[in-house]
Image 1 (cartoon, helix red, strand yellow):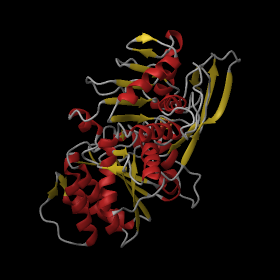
Image 2 (tube, protein in one colour):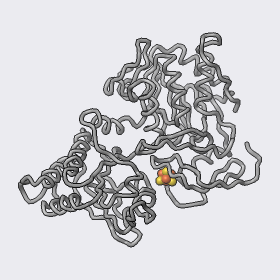
Image 3 (cartoon, rainbow, N blue to C red):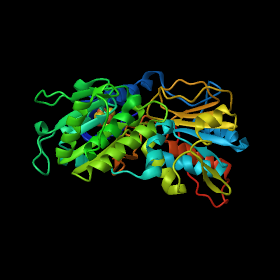
Image 4 (cartoon, rainbow, N blue to C red):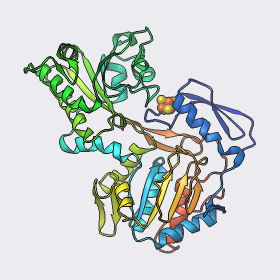
Length: 440
Ligand code: SF4
């Protein structure tokens, strides 16, 4: 535990959602971290959870009994050493942590998947099928004059999106906060989150999110000038949709944004595909871009690291014959349900609630220090951006933001632990680099 006097830091990046805001002011006092600026509920909850273990302590355990880090690392290595088909799930970590997980999966012939894959793959299916026209947060900030939220209010998931990207006056081309408009399609949870500083509310065209595909296709036809029959589509009056189609054509830079976790229904990828078709149609008339939003628990980072190391995104097995990717058969949930994994190595360092799926199998957890979980080996690890430095990819994947270490309360990093396990699995002299596991 650190015994330094309280220390204030500014321009601290936050790791608790895909926006990775880099402007927090944070005080660290005897290991306790406190945000001094802003009131983002998600960041406050993340920093609050980071202090929860300080009094009770967080120590490694084997079969529920306290152990030293070295003992826990050895027990984890014993489990992985015996496994023929280990599954590396969760993958809630930053870039160096994910590299460590990949190295361990490579050494053991394991399968890698991320806990948010079910949601990420809604986007990947569209990207793989047809590609898409999407933009970055900086472009939205500087250019977007009309934002269409597709089945989401955005703010419930990325609380400071409007403050950081839309209600800004300091932009490259003179666009001010009150020059922008927001329209929400579908079932936004709280449309008031998109109220402008001047009090202008978002317009809501309500329908069930499951019907958003139809709505996007009707808008696309209206933009093209094709006939659309009936008085309404999915309960939205046709006249309202025709008005929105005209507004999108008249906008200088329209943006259609969605959050995959809000599109939680069967074949949601088809609705996203329709939104992307609408964007493509609009580009015959004006500029318009898609904006896929998300990025929690290091999901975009896991995707990037896995892709550049293997050529495939997650749901990939690192077999001796080379990486094998199967978005259906290597879905972690399916692998576990079908009994195809003989050990589970679960990493979840952002959120103490994201524990591994229940089930009887040898399980190693590298978890948030406040996590409570039943497993064979538990090793509390540092939280990215609080205990551990390293990059995370932002929601638009165009920027990798360096997270900072704000305190040292003796928690090892994911990469320290994976290196320690590797050192046991691949004895010295076997051509592999060795690293010392830092003591708790
Ligand atoms: S919006 Fe996201 S990144 Fe920004 S402060 Fe809140 S939780 Fe952190």
